[in-house]
Image: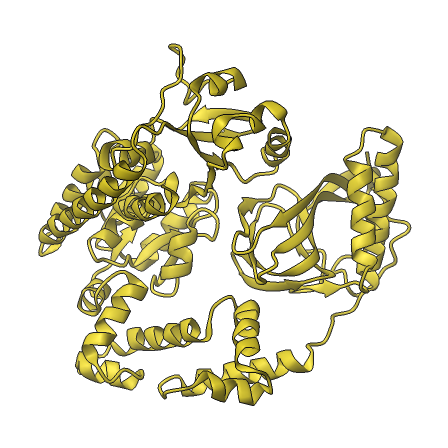
Length: 545
């Protein structure tokens, strides 16, 4: 069903004149995020309008972070990815509206062309009067998801009214407290080398210490200490490019009097020691796939080039994005492979680490640029790590052995602890995509759980390859798993089906679900096969079990 925009006034809030557009609503979701939970990164196949009903959060997109508060709106264009990080202890409630926009063809008004560019001038958020957004979205959600066809037409009217309100709204100026908060952040930026007390910052903002601490974290997504540590580590990385500076000098120039404490803090924040970081910067090693980055980091090498994206490579994007000079396009990896080859060629790497599953055409292009070390799909990940280390030469082979020894020790310790607590427990590892469950028992994550940690993964009945054949609900009932680990694909084609499953009585009566032992897993690290991802799976397993 399509609704024109005659009721939507033209206004500078829209980059395009809304009177020239036709809108088609696709779905309406009401989502409540528990405190500290958030919304995992999901891909958009259409425009997505995020309306914050209560609480505070941060919209995480590939081009940055956008804070969003109650009564606020944010628009994501098609073919992008976004996620939500909650910013309050009370959680975050929102409505997610997916819709398409069309424009008449000038020479043929009967023909509509889909629009995909930014149509809204607001770079961040816009606000509706208190209560107005909630009322419109409540009505829209109720009517759109009801069973009466007439209500869907009324939902269209609500949607146009919402767009009309959006067109008329103005940016909301920062409150005095937020302006003062920003002033303290600027002070930290200028004085991070010095010892700064929280009481001093709170006094500058005219707030109590506890309220200031809470407000800073809600606004900027990290604590004052985390923010200041990040500044110091980033500055230290820049100083390390100067070969004339000793590590003691670097530590002191960024505010650490003890170089050994600085070294421990640096490794905790970056995953590598300062000396390994300096060595890695002297080499131009490129990672051509997400897993390649996980292999190189295990060897103490921060890649010179790597695919980065907040959804498909969220961990590497947030933690190492500032350290990797050349960012390859990580959106739906493989989609812009020709552009990635151009970027790689300009960066002149000495070695490229790449999965052997890329196309023959890509392989030929990569091999024209530099020497390529392929991660063979027929090899286990430990063998692949040793092969990459051998290709790198030097100290890399010793680094691989040290890393594998460390991993084995951690797996033994965590696995032993889980075995004592969860003896005899049956666990299912599943994926849910486009309305169907599939087994993830053939994944590398399953190898970590069963092979490295000794966790008993329950087997499903029958000869079917359940990793490719949809699993009917009766099979899940027959498995009688004590615990279920589930990865839900974060895309528009999957999420409505998942919401339906969550309300299904038979699903709710599964022993694991009924006992509260259903654990929703993110694709990162659970779907990545690399040493770095597997070590993070160990830590998550220790938390889950």
